[in-house]
Length: 219
Length: 171
Image 1 (spheres, rainbow over the protein chains, first blue to last red):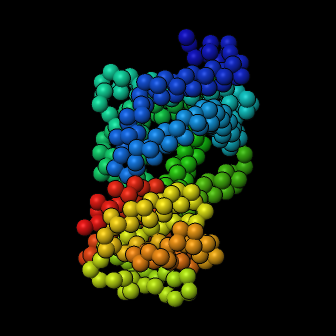
Image 2: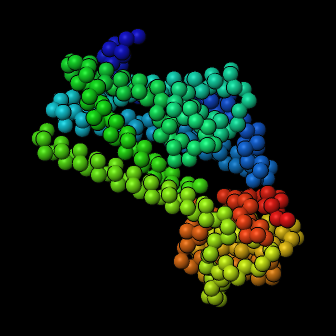
């Protein structure tokens, strides 16, 4: 289906609910297919006793609803914040677009991030059947992290390298395309708007995450 | 939007980015330095519950040293302490230094609850100036740092740890 028709045909609420439902479904599928108790026992048996690992798993199962709720809230907050950043960009560039329309663009563009989740499930189900908990944790398809051995790089670089991926770049172009469609000017101007608003905000976010990593999880 | 306003937004962004990047860099350098320094027993100074300073020089020579960083209010620390007491024989001649940054009253109550004073191998210490992080880096509760008789770090565990994992590093 063409992006234009998606944009015109569906309401913001419907798109948001659909995005959240699909994201939660993929999370559910990946938990059921990829995560089994054996992975936890293997990962923690050096440090924890069997009963400690069992209670860890039990606690995690008890908080499952909270995990799903957090994912849903995160999607909502992320799309809102990105719409706000783009809105600031439009003001700076003297372009007039309503916040709601930018919010819709952010939601539609966010669908691109479902692809790496699907690829992850496919990869560990069909290609790499023998994996550990840290393999699951650090895997991000088509990202810069794949170039490095995760054991050989400092922890603070894990997130930035994961974030530097093909889908992230595609996301920038989707955002730009959405804006281009709205303001009906050339694509370069829309891309410039995205690059001058979203990218700086993303850089700040990455540095903030790196700061949290070095502060709360030092080696 | 007016050009000066855009300029201010741009400068604010660059300022925030430079400030945070510098913080990340300095903090990371500090973490690396601590991690390297703790490979040998750091020149720490904690206090006994009587208020007497207890430094690295006062550690008995030729013994393994097992630091247990704990908090009297942490349930995992309570469990860890119970386990240490239950397996005290397996610690051999190791000196167990249980360090907490909590209040001396709480540490004292904790010590009394588990009768820690009755175990000659265990010394309860107070991190009065909250400097454990400066010497040992990551300071979650409970954490365990095991040094051999040559005062070299053998193993560090963060979070609850089974006794078998600790005692296998004590010769």
